[in-house]
Amino acid sequence: MNTGFIKVSAVSPRVTVANVEKNLQNALKTVKAENESGSSLIVFPELYLTAYTCGDLFLQDALIQSALDALIKFSKETAYSDAVICIGLPLRVSGRLYNCAAVLQSGAILGIVPKTYIPNYNEYYEKRWFASSEKVNCSSVIIDDEEVPFGSNLLFTLSSGAVLGVEICEDLWVPVPPSSELCLNGADIIANLSASNEAVTKNDYRKNIILLIILFIFNKLFHGNQVQLSFPLPAIDFYVVICLIITIVFYIRRKNGESKTYFKS
Image (cartoon, rainbow, N blue to C red):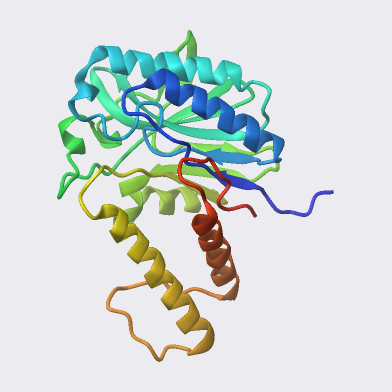
């Protein structure tokens, strides 16, 4: 029965730095599990095939080639799945290295979306390795002898008919993110592939963010706007609050290192 809802899986399997083969095998296991659960869209983290924190290993040809080989293998071994899959990897195009999201379905690579806004502050050094999509001077790339669309303005249609737009991490944190233009061009769903590097106290920082969101939600539900928070949060309606609560419950219940579907709609 078509209820008009789409089942989405935001997955975060265990990742091993620069061990592309191991990450590939984890990704294949994850797709199998989420495909069996009926997901229409499966979103992996940013740079998942290599891990985000490879540092200057991103300058090594062996790592970049391994990631490309893994993508080709991943596409072939997930040909059984009708779900649209987004997975992150570094990709060299015309002499420049890009932080990319590959979008796949039924064994085909539908497109490659490069990151536009490259962070270069605090613990982030991405400009040391990656170019912005603004540097792209082509609209397609050749992967495994097939021409694949390449660009930050790509849209993809799910089997349900919903239109998907893709951006990567920092792209969301600018005044006018790529997703804004994608939505104006018809996107119904935005997939944002994100990751972060290691830093002292970052784990505590993430937990504190969750606690602050919980505080905000309960304040919104039971006390109106009586409590003022010291940081900006977007206005949310009742249905968004329910979705956030569900997301937080799944987050709390997640066991360390396990792949889970955090949000399904």
